[in-house]
Amino acid sequence: MITTSTRARSARRLASLLAVRTGVHVVVRYDRPLRRYRVVWTNGPDEARMRTVAMASATVVPDLDLGELLWHRSVS
Image (cartoon, rainbow, N blue to C red; front, side, top):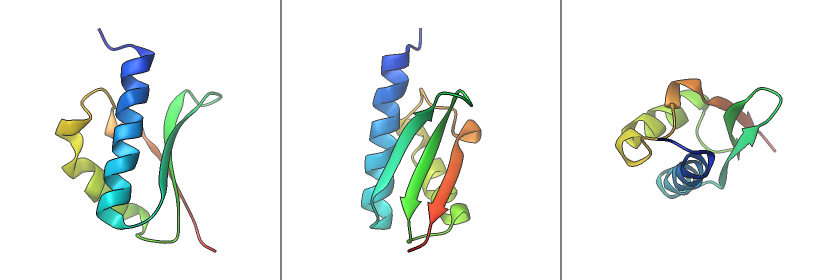
């Protein structure tokens, strides 16, 4: 059974993996109103590249549905 805490742990792990592999600070947090996880980062790779890196990590975070993630890149 997948619980909220296992998904949250996977979200933190994905954020860490994305940060290491892309060189930018990444946060994966739950968006309560939308009931989905959101990947947030500033500058760095575009959304397509970030999705590619995430998909390469899919086996490490099996509790997250990577196809359901929301992606938000801001530029400063």
